[in-house]
Length: 129
Image 1 (cartoon, rainbow, N blue to C red):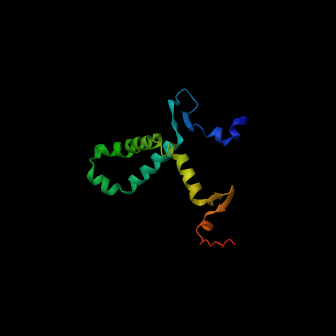
Image 2 (cartoon, rainbow, N blue to C red):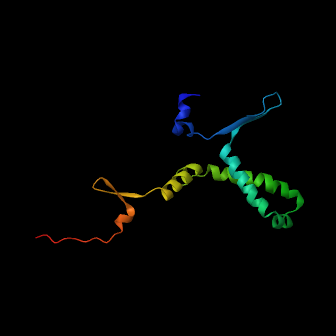
Image 3 (spheres, helix red, strand yellow):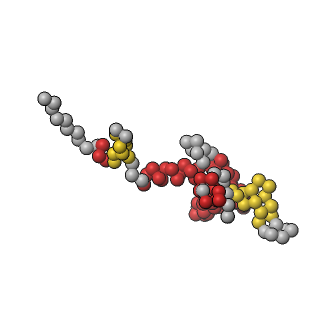
C-alpha cells in the first residue's frame, strides 16, 4: 500500500468512490464514480421510506412507487452529500460535532487548560492589604 494511505488525513481527503462493478467485458463502469457515503445515506433513506410503506403505497399509484423507492432516496442523498454544513462535508461535520459533544471541553486561562465545569464554580476574592 502507498505511504500516503497511512495518513488518514490524506487518505480521506477525497470521497471513496466505486468506479467499476465486475471484472469481465460486461462489467458496469461509472464515468464519474459513485460515492460510498451517498450509497449509505440513500440506503438509510430507503429504510425510512420502507418503514412507512403502508401509508405511502396507499397515496402513490403503483407506477410511481418504483420511482419513489429507488430514485427519490438517491436524489435526496446526492443533495445531502453535496451540501456543506458550516463549510464542511456532511461526514466531517458530524465527526467534529460528536467529538465536541463527547470529549472534555477545556477553556484556557493564562495559557493553561482549565476544565470547563471548574469555570462555573463561585469565585471568591481576598482583600489586598
